[in-house]
Amino acid sequence: MLDANPFHELTCIEEVVRSQQDRLLVLQKAREALKWIDQIGDTEGVKYLVLENNGVPEKILLKIT
Image (cartoon, rainbow, N blue to C red; front, side):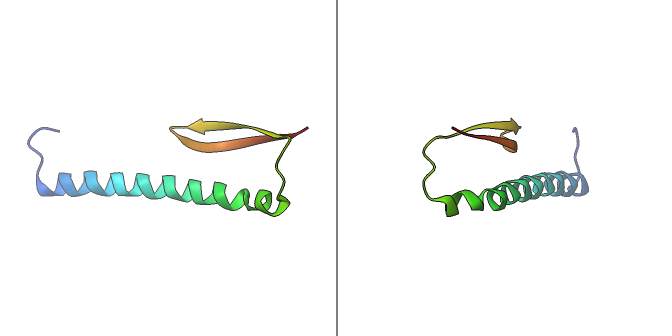
């Protein structure tokens, strides 16, 4: 943006902060959803595939062999 004023700068910063908060929320949900794996203990034979969007996991596919 050319000739940005303080309002434009604030708007830009707010957008970045909101985006980071959204990303953090998605990561927290993913961590919460995977807590049950910690309870299993032995994860040998578990294969997984992580589908990401902009570096944030959206789906984790697990296969137990």
